[in-house]
Length: 446
Image (spheres, rainbow, N blue to C red):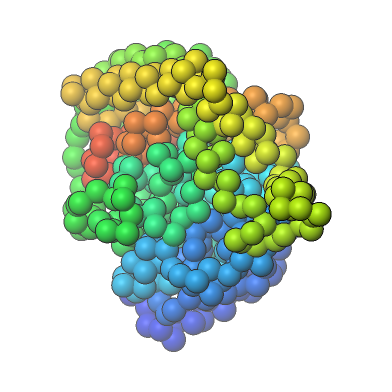
């Protein structure tokens, strides 16, 4: 597939041919299930695949949930407006985990997405459709959302580049919220240059978003520097949960970075089990609040009932999936009277400690290197419980708790040809640093 950098040099007539080619390829690869329904187009320019939780005016936006079927967006998310301003357009909806809740894209009401590297394996989640499409050559680039690794983990499993910007760097206006203090929209692309281009296009202050930071749009692409050298922190304590293949890939990546002239510093952080506990308490608490609005009255599908209470109950029971119900229940529990202090308040205190630990590391180092997941993409059905699925996020969730930028890139493959991804984490609003480091590493590994 043509890269985003190349596509931006094409005329509108040439782009029409590219869109026709993409449409044809999607039909030929229907079994991947990366796209939802017929491909729609919003405006002219380079086609960018859009995750189904980002509003595009006139499109049905469902968050891959039965409860939102029939909802037509009356407005564009700010990132869609920014795409239009930068010679790009929304082109097709990407399949995802329902309401972005999941790590495998199996909870979608449209059926599971398959990993293009091995269709018996998961593509990761929740932006599984976005990553699978880019990896399979069915999209030039895509937009996903990252709450606890939902851009980086599927990018790592499918073998492409995924970037989660700093919290507040990209407008959340028009993103259907899962966990408001953690969600960020970001690019999934074929390479680091394209990630920089797409990030530049969607970044910048938005007065419609109260969490948006008053910073100008980025210009990282023009400032990419593969020769920049940094002090890189490694957290070897975290590797105890990883498979042998991931551990070896981590050590090999460290050696490559060292040979390039980067300084490697060993650091340690709070055990990952505290990260996972803190994350799932906070995100489920926020989800239970954010999803209260989906009740059959204002949006999408409605079930019938003899009373208003029955209608609420019947709608939410029939049209929310099992994983969404589970997280709403967990969130309601940790916010309930008698448990608020023991769980939610404690989680916020631990979150503060995690942020302080990252800050301490970034006082001395420029970048942190970590794996993206403890293993390569698992087979469908390999995860036997929700807890097992939650534990696959151990390396990604800390970044969201601290609001930091992080980029995942493929660094190698296992014996079966499955991608092994590593992430470069930067200090807040230091997207240029991680892009420079990744750009240099990408060139070295090519």
